[in-house]
Amino acid sequence: MSNADTVIVLDFETTGLSPDHGDRAIEIGAVKIEAGVVTDRFQALMNPGRRINSFIENYTGITNYMLQGQPSCEEVMQQFADFIQGFNLVAHNSSFDKRFLDAELTRISRYYQGDFACSMLIARRIYQNATNHKLSTLIDYTNIHAEGEFHRALFDAEMTAKLWLVMLEQVRKEYTLDDIPFSLAQKIAKTPKNKLNQLLANRVINAG
DNA sequence: TGCCAGGCCCTCTTTAGGGCCTT
Picture 1 (cartoon, rainbow, N blue to C red):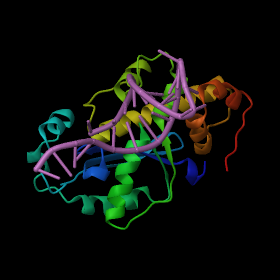
Picture 2: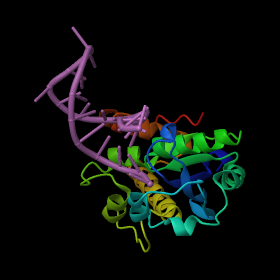
Picture 3: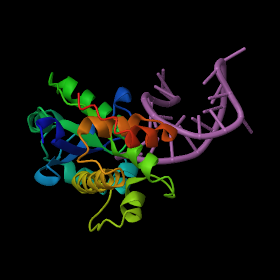
Picture 4: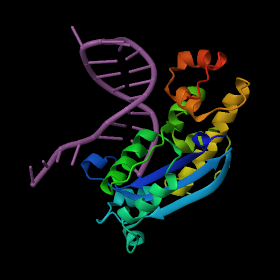
């Protein structure tokens, strides 16, 4: 198991959908998975420097009152940049979390070397019978025990991590692979559904 | 002032449109 196969599963709660239109992070949650086991966690609220609207308060359960006195985004993201340094990254609908990670780190001139993989894209391929591919639906669909509140960063990161491990184990068993390197997981996420069977049946594993 | 996302994927496609998923 190389460093490349240790992954950080992360989730942001934010003021809205688009950092390009001024939205900011208000909470980050993340777990580190090493050799299939959660070995570390990161969770922090952060103050975006403005009030959040009522939709976000209701959606996340994070209130303006809770954000009073919290450290700034810049302060939290400095610590988070250290936490993720050198590791690959996983998120549910990773294009969303990547945009906020990039935007927040750019503000403090910090960067990361890891690649992203998306649990939602893999789920869309291997759970084609699920009613939808929202995180909460997939947790229920895969019978993963869930005790907590969705739409809080650490809980969603923990649930995404469990889903990630269940999905990789299912693929590994189904195709009798020794393991699923991160690079293969990325390929699964990017391979069209009708080519997926061919990719895995042929064990086209390229760990590079 | 007021506007306001973006990437992936499917299909009645590719000279496009709309649904899904994230907050």
